[in-house]
Each structure stands twice: as structure tokens, then as C-alpha cells.
Length: 462
Image: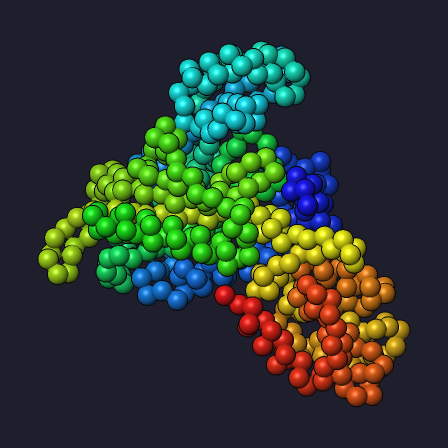
């Protein structure tokens, strides 16, 4: 299937089936904002729960945090974000179209590769030499490239002044770094250990994104893994392998994934080494998740600026040192779209559209249908089965339209199994159980239904 075409179809399905809606749509929308609908919320939550289970719950060296979105502005000054958390902005003087200079070049000259991090003068030179036109008006009338800070500013208190300025967090990491000392003093973890959290981050993006790929606010899940300085490479490779394996467990096709290391010019101000796990979008490979070696940059800066002692004391040697940090970051908002793209399938034989989601990710694990909505005896029996199933699994109820349309709707949202209650059910206590991927149907005793689903769903767990 043409993957370019798949993207447009997934975007349409996402709205039609309640996964993702344009933000503020009844007021004309707000660029780069999206709302997750009922099914999208469940899908994102299921991904998050699996992430937490995989990287936090089952590990004795990982500890969860939930830190504030708003922090002292001194945090962002110490971390370097107020100076260095920037993108490169360029404007068309003819139509006032505004975009990122690196994205303009990459879209116009895809064979050139990634140009993020190049000096402003070099970006201007590439645009001029290649006579890159404005994608909005077609003219060549660009301003000089300049830096633009991505942090959102807001005010605390009732009086607006520079003294009251705070920032919406641009990443989750700083909340974990500033709590490093409190964690050491309260639970006394031993190196190596990690601090993990998930939540919203905010970036004032210049360029309009492609659906949830680039938005003003987004969900992240990440952890800072604190290690001895001499052991960072070992742990970098360890987490690189773990991230890739997790991507495969989510059902992503390995042929759509690759690792790409950042060039020296492209590295963030805090990183000595960064690799992106990229996904093959229709517009090329782009970042899905990131893995960064942040050295002791953050803890060292916060120690200097705050005066707090952020050193770790080795319990064996009593040596004091600032740990180094390896940071895996997982973008959840864009991952919802990626998972939908990789699970999207059109059955040309049976003329149906299916989201072949890993069962653990599916918004609903099963759906229950009474064959006819105007037969009280069928409704009563179906409701009893529905109530029993939903005690253990998120289960959908649908009594609208014909059975074929109900199957089609559940296929499109990725429900693994559908249960139909018909007149035979009233006679012999059996139901029709339909498999999403194969459409095969079997008759099953109602008292065996729960065990059957448990066995099937557990067999497909990772």
C-alpha cells in the first residue's frame, strides 16, 4: 500500500472514529493543537501504561516522579534553556510566511539530509544558492535566518512584569534534576538508578506540524538514568537496545525504524552524544524517540546556580562525585499516530479497513452485540455478558445498525474480538465470537467466554 496515501487515510480515520480531533475546531481551530478523543485517549493511556510497566514498575532501579509544569525561572536559566532552547526562524517578506529555515531547506532539498544546527550564515547561503522559493507565494524574498526561543512565557500573580515571568516546561528532565537531592535524601537509591515521569511539555513551534508529529503541547515519557561517569557508554548502549525492543513490542515494523546519530552541529546544548530512533514517515525518516548522553551538564549547572550539593556519595568508597546522565525520551503524542499508521490495513478481499493494534493497546478488548436491538430477550442476555466482561476488560456495547456495520466500526478502532448474541444463544447458551484479524467466527459457551478471552489476550501480550 502507498504509505503516503496511508497517512491521509489514518488522519481521516482518527477523526471519524474518535481518536484525534483538531483543537478548538468549532472556533476555526488553533494551528498545531489537537485533542485526543475517547478512543485516542484510551490508546495513548494504554501505551503509557505499557511504558510504565516496562521501564518503571518491574525494575528496582527506577523511581517515578510527577513534577510541576511551572518551576522557578532560575531552573531554566541554569539549564541553559533561556539562552539555547532555540530554533532558526526565517520570514518571506512578500507574504509574511514564517517557517524554520532548516525545515524549509530539508523540504526543498531532501537529498541534502539534515541541516539542523548549521550556522545561520550557512543556512542563508544554502537558501540563496539553491533559489528556494516560498512554499506559500512562490517568491524568493527571505529575511536573514535568526534564532527564536521555543519556551512559552507566562506570568505569575496579578501584576504583569518581568519579575513575574515563568515558563511552561519545554521538557520533563529539569523537574527530575532539581529533585535529585530530595530523592537521594529520602529513599537513598544506589547508582545506577533512574527517575522517570510522563506528562505534558510545551514548545512554541514555528513550523506547522504534520498532524501530531509537531505540536505546541505534547505528551512525553522519559527518564534520567544516573550512572558513574566511566560507565555511561555501557548504559547508553543498554538503553538503546531496550528502546528498540520496546518499539517492536508495540507492533511497529522494524523496516520502518532506524537509528541516526546527531552531528556535532546538531547536538543540543546539554548533550555530548544523541541518537534518534527515527520512523519512516511519508515525508522521510523523522525522530520518534531520542536517546541523549547529557553528561553531568544539568546537575553541575544546578549545583553551581543553586548552591545545593548535588553530588552522590559512593557507599563503598565514600567518594563524592556528580553522576552522569543517560536520557531516553519517548514522544507519546506522535507515537499514537505512528502506531495507527503501522497497524492500518486495508483488506482488499473483504473490502474492510482494520487497525491491527497489539491487543494490549486496543481501546477496547472486546465488543458485545445483540443481533437485534428490538428484541428485549436478546438485549437482556447481551447486557449480562457485557457486564460480566467489562469487569476484567474494557468492553464496547453496540446495538445500532446491522451486524456488518458494527463489525466494520470495531475493525476500524482495533477491537480484537466481537461477541454476538443471537437467538441460538437463548437456546444453547453459545455466542458467536469473531476474530478481528482473520474474521473467523466460532460458537462458544457463554461460561467459557471469559477464560477464552483471557487466554487469547495473554498469549498476545509481550
